[in-house]
Image (cartoon, rainbow, N blue to C red; front, side, top):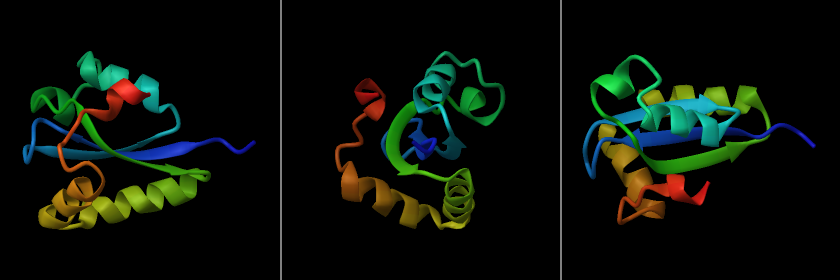
Amino acid sequence: MPDRCHVYILASQRNGTLYVGVTSNLAGRIAAHKAKAVPGFTKQYNVHMLVHVEEYTSIHEARAREHALKRWRRVWKLELIEKDNPTWKDLSGEL
């Protein structure tokens, strides 16, 4: 069975600061963000709500998607989140 990789978007609040990341251990990575154990951007700006997740079977595909999303305009990211998660529910409880 291939390893699963995830591209995810975190938010500080609805329409707040956004962060795009990639990981092969989604639950662990989100727990680290929530515990503020990941130094840098997410800790500094209190970006902790998991609002969007995509699953890939290849780290290469996941990193390519992460790179593409990071280049997207903010409005496109907001539309992507709102399409599948219109209430901006924190999806981390479903992991």
